[in-house]
Length: 98
Length: 244
Image 1 (cartoon, each protein chain N blue to C red):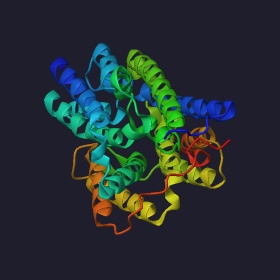
Image 2: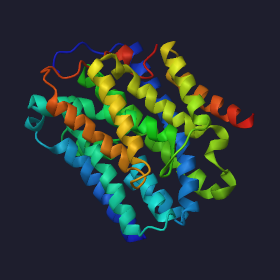
Image 3: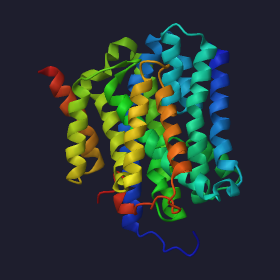
């Protein structure tokens, strides 16, 4: 177990450092720039979807959806970030008590 | 990025406050990681080492998830690395913005994660990007590790993070980070497709892979798109948490 943990830790750091160290000209191509700009959008959207609608390898619908609904409304109303996040968890927690 | 106007004290404190807020939100979930990791069969020391040295949440969850499901530790490590490639892409995006060399770059690499990237990538100046990146990275690092230790030590006594709705908080936090990017039609398309691809992949792949697969949508749309201009970067006021 320790071997796997340490290998993965070193590997993850190398992946991070490689991103920061690759020559700047890698980004000079318009296609690469477009892709680099779109990647956080795709991944953040996927993270939202996976965090809210899945549990392990199954798709689920539970109180997290109500939390996300609150977050959407709060963001539309331009509420502060902390209100969006804490409010979403409070809504989900309350929904589970009902 | 040269000769940019300096940030005002108010802008600086706003960026710092937002970074700490993200740290609190994300760090809190570290309690869940600590508890899940120990429940998966890792020791408290192994759990804490993961948060200290790997320090990229999705990869950490993936590793302990594979182990919990009976997977070999090395296949857990491979899954973690697969997810870690996401940070390479973040690094490519952040390097020209942060413009760090030497030991600063080596140190920055350790806190190059979803949150530090999201809180820096929208800043129009290097000064703002560095401040957002550092504040968020350090805040998340400290709170994530503290929370991991608390969660691991408390173990099963902490109970299910769902009790406090913390699982819903994470989705909301990611949505808030995504929000300012959804003003552009192409971004909305990529976001919807990315979410759809990820959910389609959930039942058929190991935990964590669906998010990486969504990156394929970005590559595809980026390559096929005819529009030359890359996405307009939103201003500081549009950044998640930047509502002053």
